[in-house]
Image (cartoon, rainbow, N blue to C red; front, top):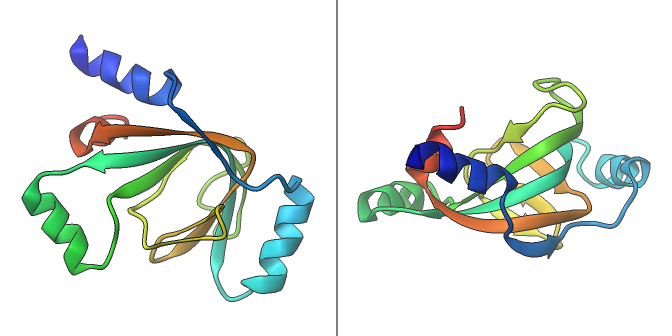
Length: 132
């Protein structure tokens, strides 16, 4: 029962408010296409910035690949250049590589454009792993 409660809290509970970009969907599409035409990108809304609580070994694994202990879970995909997800799907990213301009969350393969308001939460890697 505790496991279900942790997942529910992650997906639907309160967290610290974060602001992504205030651009409309169309403005964000134009912005990214003009600046990042060679990169895969995904526009998302209703997102959660997940700070991962890691063991020392897990942290070393991320450090070795120059990634950071954070990922995004978004309840709503607006557009994905790779067509991995349909409009309205949810998505969970791989760990953060670079965060730019206060709304561009970059992994090794994709730039996620964080639109509108999101929440920031902290959980263990185990909790995140249970939702997929």
